[in-house]
Amino acid sequence: MSQNNAKSETTWFLFALGILILASFFVGLGSAPLFDVDEGAFSEATREMMLSKNYLTTYLNGAPRFDKPILIYWVQLVSVKMFGINEFAFRLPSALAGTAWATSIFLFFRKESGNRQAFFAAAMMVLSLQVIVIAKAAIADGLLNCFLAITMFALLQHFKTGSKHALHLAFATAGFGMLTKGPIAILIPAAVSFLFALHERAVKQWIRMIFNPIGILLFLCIALPWYLLEYRDQGMAFIEGFFFKHNLSRFNSSFEGHSGSMLYYIPVIIVGMMPFTGLFFTVLIKIKSLLADRTNRFLLIWFLFVFVFFSLSGTKLPHYTIYGYTPLFILMARALPLSKHPRLFAVWPLLFLAVVACLPFLLQIALQKIDDDFIKAILTGGVELTGLNHLLIIIATMLSITAIQFIPRFSAANKLLATGVVLALLINLYLMPLVGNLLQKPVKEAALLAKKEGYKVVMWELYNPSFFVYSESFAEQRAPKRGEIVLTTVKDLKNLQHTSLLYSKYGIVLAKLTE
Image 1: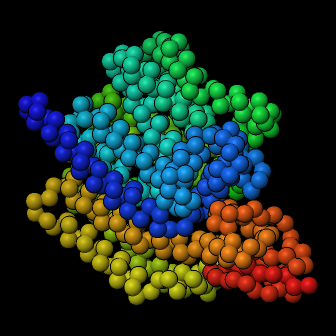
Image 2: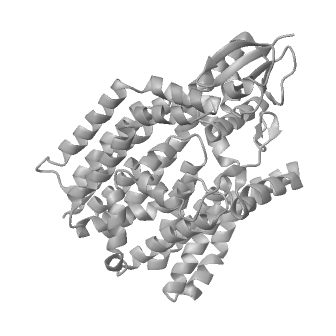
Image 3: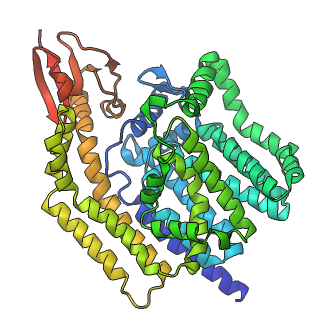
């Protein structure tokens, strides 16, 4: 292939990837209300930063917030100043980070694997269920995954070519990762590269790599200033809150009740990889053949370290395993030619959709067995929002995916990607708004009512920081007193006497305690 033809092909694949990114990351970006707790907390901290003009320390409901470093708040702040206080603006940085993340997969692996395989790997990342969600979320993980992917790709390139530019890029992006989510941006690259070097008997190369003076200087120039300034501003409260509580404690213990067994991430991966789950099992089956390649060995070590590390962690959250998804997408793209029955891949998304189609019936069954009034109110709302239309939409989606499998000129890869596009549009245009209307719209509407009427609200027995964003005010978290207005649940409202209901929907209530 001539150089001009190669450039033209690369441009075409980048354009096609851009179309998929628009369909997956940007369609419906602001269609659902902010989800609590994480989206609400990040967005409110950004809103308070804009009001206070304190660009060093983040605050939530007026109190210092040490959960994450500063970079995500800075980029959200820029977006909010450009587009206003709304869901689109808070989520835009994650969508852009997801775009860079997908592009990095294509650009780093096109030279080694060719345009088609690199495109397929990037496209699977763009269209997988869990990434669709994370690339729309107003949290730090989309940005971290972008920096983490580039760091790991650059380290791999350095291992293979000795490129100093690649090594310096790895240190620089690790610095930005450190500014995004902290030590995890160093831990994963350092541990994976060491294990790979150990396997390849290249520990001396790894030591020279890790102690590269220019790389260390780059990392420190990017990451260190904010940490020093934050420590100077907040002292030991920052060290204890950020490093001890939100980093070490998350591994040593179950943080905020987010626990699980050693098998926690297996179902997460099976669902999170939809509609490409079948290829994940192909990788497992063909692992011996794949490991003959050095790059594949690096990728497998990357995935396995993330999987094992977070399986051992006391705190477990579904999005932690995404830090190991990037190598999986590439391994899956390389495993596709080894698959003997690619048509069976459609079974996984069809099974997933069959469960989603049964949702109205499952909700009605759950309603009969649940005694908690708040949960019952949510389930009742779910029944109201789903029904015949829900069933018809899901069945139409299943029929579309089935029809794709019988398009004669479509390759196995094209059928998988077409299935991914159908599922992405379903998630963006129907499922995410549906879940948002059920779980978060009541909080938003209650907050907008409080803002309109100028209510000073007390939050009791629940924690929904998105309420602060939409009401543009703070709320004390305590038991309400007579004459005060409280945001609570239908379950906890029963424990209050002499209340006047101001708003109620799907278990969320805004009420005034009468004198």
